[in-house]
Length: 349
Ligand code: PEP
Ligand code: MN
Image 1 (cartoon, rainbow, N blue to C red):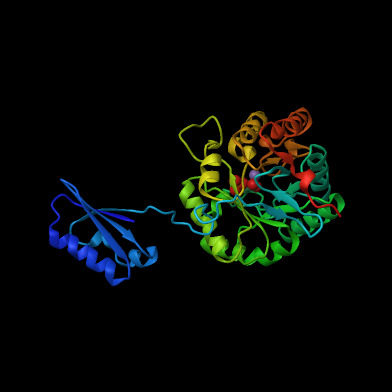
Image 2 (cartoon, rainbow, N blue to C red; image 1 turned 90 degrees about the vertical axis):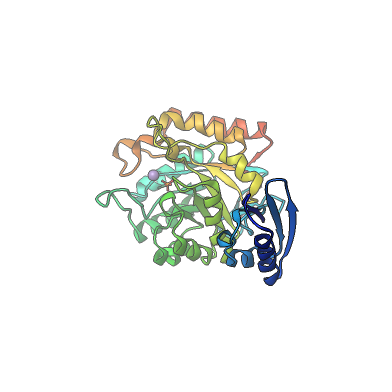
């Protein structure tokens, strides 16, 4: 940490800061410039926070040098992590050496629709099935999901296809039942900063897919991941799903640069959701290609057998030729950036 003194700070002000830092066991290194004095602090960050340094007389600014997140940072964990998803013997990796394609319907609507979407996803090369049983809708009048019935459908479809399942949990009280049925818990953009939910997911014993809040900075997102990690769960995969900007042509703006930025600062895997970023099916394939090229560890895409009847997000769901184009991109592009398909590294029963 570095404390910057204001130009009119006195020697007594500087001495007072040094004294306070030493009182909590820290060391202070004073460097006097022509106009300003800066003080470098070495010691326990937490105890420095309690000092409320900004309130001390003569202090102009305080800068942090190390990351505010510890467990998810690369500062103490240089090697990038791989998160394994699924039941023992059938697990699929998400990490730096592989490319993981996840797909499925936005919402679980019925057993037939989910199975059909899963088969479409699987034939396009997907190794993990997505599908929402609890839908966090902007309108309270919109379809809210099938709840436990939807979780049961997902578990049945996992049995039928062998695909591990990721599904969203929107309420901390539902974490046990979702963890009982699913292989990975998704925390959506609207709940990224729901700290009670993050902590409950951290105690669930299941890997977590943490989407970026639509107005969250990368640092806030990584702090949210830290909440999960702090509860003993380091199996967290981040998902860039677009952020709110002034541009109305797309539902959100896919922040593609977040992928390498996150990879430089955190060891956690990061995937891209082009469907929820764009909100339009014609952009899903180009944005998926961009995600692969920029080095994402995977993508998660909406597919639906009949988008015109979908109860949620039909306009962004792929099928037919679009899905074939995506399948081709997912087959051809990852090897160009040095990745093998997750199916090649997945455990086989
Ligand atoms: C979803 O993936 O179904 C979803 C609701 O996504 P997001 O939280 O990114 O809007
Ligand atoms: Mn959706």
